[in-house]
Length: 156
Image 1 (cartoon, one colour):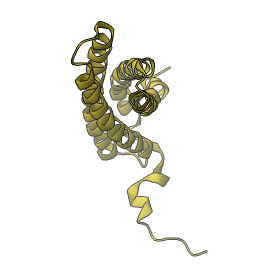
Image 2 (tube, rainbow, N blue to C red):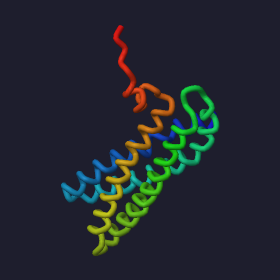
Image 3 (tube, rainbow, N blue to C red):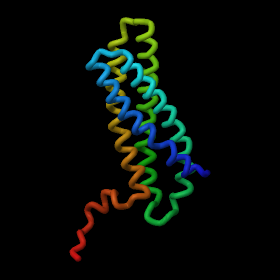
Image 4 (cartoon, one colour):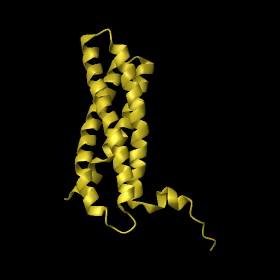
């Protein structure tokens, strides 16, 4: 198993986990249910751990595919740039999730503030997750690249 295979194995969880976590967090906030909110916090932390592994395998995956036909270094570089932003926001989301968990258990007065900061970070993480997922998919799936959408349609 090489880095490209490992990267493909782990890279979906940070994206899906963050999206699902956001839905659970919003549900928990609406329902005022700490169990749901805590579940979301744990999911964000686990997603950040998987994001770390995804980044750790990304460089090796890049070296394996960058010289393949129809790929090139530019599209991989764009994916890498978005991924670097995503992981920073994901780490911040995980940190505030951990702080939120601690605040809930200690019944701290800043619990609501931490919850809102975590929500805002999670919203940013979901936005970046969608972008990093799309840019990653474009590496091998030429049919979803923006340039192919601007191509002249066939008339056969």
